[in-house]
Length: 318
Image 1 (tube, rainbow, N blue to C red):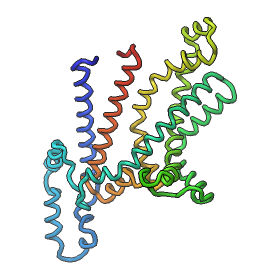
Image 2: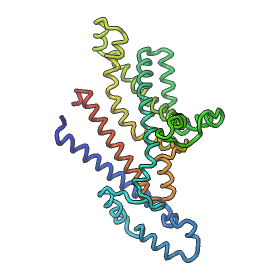
Image 3: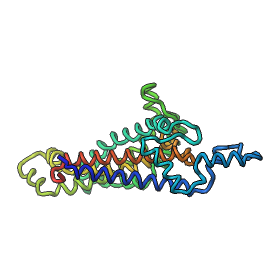
């Protein structure tokens, strides 16, 4: 069992990371050229005699106050669990995030579920038949997958399957509760795009770990005992080598979320990526900061769960 110190230190570290990220995002938005009040006024800002209205709106947003004061005015309700309302639409930030989160969560979740078994199979097979055509092919494809940006691969799939072949819809999202068939067809290309990227990352790790395990002493002992090659590879070598994959998945969460945001834009899923980009362009401070805090907390929680799982699986770490 973990003691109080082992529990408090990760929590304190996570809170420090959340605060640091919130401060960075806040400063980045405030230092970006442009006046959010002008964007909120829209066409009205071009009409004469709106100076008083502009000053009043800037005062409501707190734009005329010093940066530390603006940050505290935003941080104080956040500490109370209140993300505030959108400066542009007036809707609750929580409701906006809740409405945009399902496509993003489905995209990341399905990509992880598909990429893990595929990576294990390819990595173990390439390590078992090292220096073969299969080995060279797997390593070449994984290297190519790391070199190709996910959004560019998404554009290729979009051009091939939606524009030229017209077998899959080009954009949009359908909830699985509404139409499971539509959900599958709309998510096929986005999930494939993100899965191929994640497979490239995980396959290289599996290949490296299993290759080292196959020449370890305990594997040679297992072979000397007369165990079948299938048992040696999967039960002895692969099982021990794949335990650290939990940590690799946790470390890949940040880039995975970033890749998902770009993939969403390519296929128009209407998830957190699209909401974040539109909010940045509209200088909607509350929504941008709310999305970033939500994603940061989610990544920290998942990484904490991955660390706990790793400790559970590997007695040496405990």
